[in-house]
Length: 160
Image (cartoon, rainbow, N blue to C red):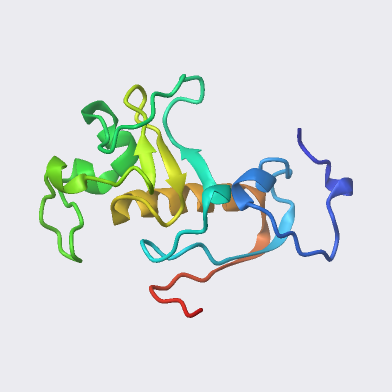
C-alpha cells in the first residue's frame, strides 16, 4: 500500500525499519534521510531485526544452511565474489567455501534460492553486508527528492 504525497507526515521523525517503511512512500517525496546502520560484526540487536535478504520472494525457504549454495553465490555475494576479490581480514585473498561458515545463531541461508535470513550487520562476510547496505541505499534513492539529502553514519566502533 503506497502512501499518497498529501498523506506523508510533515516535520516528523519516523523511527521505523527503513526497508519496511520506505516501500510505502512515493518516489521523489522525502527531503532528508538519516540512518546509522549496525556496524558489521559488532553487535546483535536481537530477533526483532531479523529479516530475509535476497533470494526468491515466492520461495518456501529451507533454512539451516550455514553456507550459501553455489548457485546463490553471485546473487548474495556480489561483485567481489564474481571477480574473485573476496574480503578476508582486510585483504583481497580468495576465500574458500569452508571459510565462509556462519554460526546458525547469527543467520542462515536458504538452500533453495540462496536468500539469507539474519540481521543487518551480522552477515558472514563484509561483502554481503555491503550488498545489503547498497540495497537499502537504492530504496533511499527512490524516495529521496532530487534536492534531498542523505546522511549515512557508518563506522567500526560503538560504545555502550
